[in-house]
Length: 281
Image (cartoon, rainbow, N blue to C red; front, top):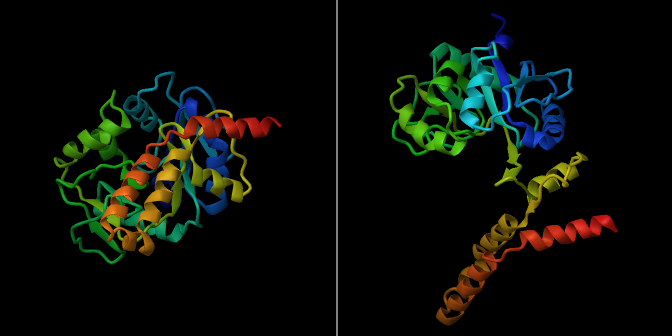
């Protein structure tokens, strides 16, 4: 088998997230222009028109586990590089590094190799390419972070009818019964921004895509401003001046109350309404 036909890029999606496909593939091929692997996009019934992308339709259901199993049955490669549709690359992908990992997975008959250190590898494993193992019993040992998977193992771990969140929890327990090693990189093999949380755009990802000159359709879903506000407040809390203020008991108590109240602010609805009103003008 051609080395490039051992592994396919598998993007998990559904029709409800088709507004992400243009941004996803625009930045994917920008930062991985020499990607030598076949690219498969899972969807319900919609098709994505791109000469380097094969759409895999799975029907009208929205149950993640069922859809993924249907999609993988249509993908001919024995290994997959698994991505969610909101993984937006932000640095050039080193194809030689990815191929090195694929070659190692196939040689060692590993279950998977996570391409980012999350879950963090916590057990030494003999190799010369910067990998470590993830011990049985580790929380979120089965994760939907970008990873190269033995497709057969991945299929065995997924139960039809499961949500992705249930799969990470219950699938982690099932992973303990698999003898093939679960491996992960110590340093990221790819770098990216996650774009969506609870069905809404993350503020930083919208800014990243706009900076890249990539159009984002904000008519389909709102921007999650609240997560950005909490991140800003958390970063301020960690600043040296904030740590000094905390040493004053009365001020510390008042500051903690203020930060807590600000974190509870429900700003998504008014800020999105304001954004849309400015757009109309």
